[in-house]
Length: 444
Image 1 (cartoon, rainbow, N blue to C red):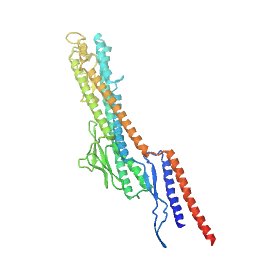
Image 2 (image 1 turned 45 degrees about the vertical axis):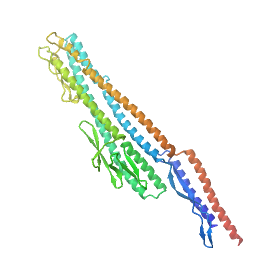
Image 3 (image 1 turned 90 degrees about the vertical axis):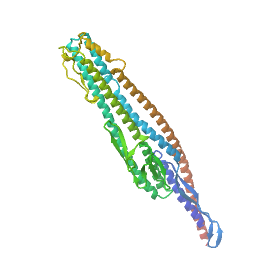
């Protein structure tokens, strides 16, 4: 009779825990990073000796052997890798697109402003003595210099934005590394098969996913499930008592690098993740800033040489129109009066402004600006295609992972009904045992 009571009691305890786990699944169905759990039920040990009989059989009931997570670690790791590459391409695309917007040759673009200089020169050649046309020519030169400065400033702001985002990403990465170290400590203390352990494992996987979204990592697990995270080069990010710190360095040209401490080299070279994407973006913007300086230098050098080859209204040699000052960000137009415009040359009153047309065409400044803008458009299109492919790969790997670990409410409803009935059956077993015991006692 006592065995019957024990069987019922074991059922109440085991199925009660199972109902609690099903309730957790339902409550966290929409919680990001939550992995479906189940209770592993097994038959309680039975058999053995009792006081007056040897080798008797004692039914043992049921026990909850532990809480398990519905997870395939290969799929989890695959999703982590795919997520890291998608993060890289997304971070890169954001800033490559921003760079395209800066260089877009709209109404205020450098290409249009440079063309306006040559257009004003052509108009001046038709009436070289016109004070209005001379002023218009000087104004177009000033506006072209201003457009170079604005474009350089916008690219500089983009570079600063990348650096700021990289600092934020590194700070978040350091926070996640510290959090993972604490989770590892909790896993080493948690009781195996407990709900607490399952919660810690969910948080461990979430944090490892965050790390992979920031930079490429190599992950292994010890016997208690604690994550050991290293860089591909072998530097420890989280390993026992070691928790690394990531730092950001910004060069004068806007390119960024990452440091790691402790490390044999002190350098982190991300191969995927947000840090890699931001590094790619910073390199691209730095390249475009250099290209813009090259164009500004070409424009200033060629236009000054052409203007200085002529004579102004007073018969003096033409002066420089632009001061390059070492870069597009500092280029300014020289303050000249309308009479200082060198429209004439030895052959005619408009011969010099007519010869400025020779600066156009193959290898000219306009063509080079167009080539730069076209190359930027191609880079943006390629980045967009890479981001789309990486996102598709990530979504597919996430779907495969979630097909195993996600909570299906229909399934949980069925499990809830099953365990409710089992719980009621266990309670009924106790009731029957009590009633039977009472009937036996009533005989006496």
